[in-house]
Image (cartoon, rainbow, N blue to C red; front, side, top):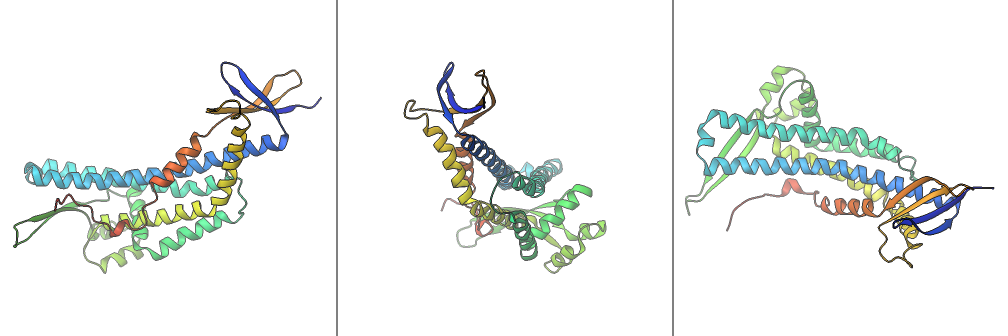
Length: 303
């Protein structure tokens, strides 16, 4: 006697135990695994975005401290603490970008999609960003420097620009890297260093950080767009699995599928909820406005 495949919901016990065929079972199982892996990729990209946000937030915080609390401009220890704060934020960002870029190929290979050349396409996307975006090249070289040599930010430049007309002043903090320090070290990528030396003796890392985030967003957007039809198909399979139960139970939060043995025992159980789909969509929506952040100016100006 062959095993059967079933679906049911749990409400104290098994409810609405319903037979499904073998293909349905494997399709539902595969769809869940694929969608969970898509969520993992979005979560890793969100790590990058959140670390970038924290870096930007703390740069603003350091600026406000120097504007409103004079001790932050004259106390050497407080100034060093500010530099270390920004270094921590930047190192966190560089670490999560490394995690994302190193693992994205593995994550894609864990997904049962219909695009055999997708990993190669992603590699081409990363190569394109490296070749065409200076900020991408700078941050990749800086990450290698941070991993093996030293801290990224050497000094925070506090800039005040006044207006003679209305006596207003603009205040800003620039996290600066001295190129001479990178050159003395001798391990920073020479090709990138030569590019930067054409622009001056110091660089404001904030500009390149934003370009880097834009590039990573383009890679993530490419993956989303490429797998959009597959994702829709997987979501439809999951929604159809829930629809078996919704005519009887209007609010079904979790279903279970499994293989029923001749003695009635259900093995290979798989619990399925819609939460991973909802969270992935929320993350996609949340992190969907990153294509032109290098052109945005964030200010506390009340005018």
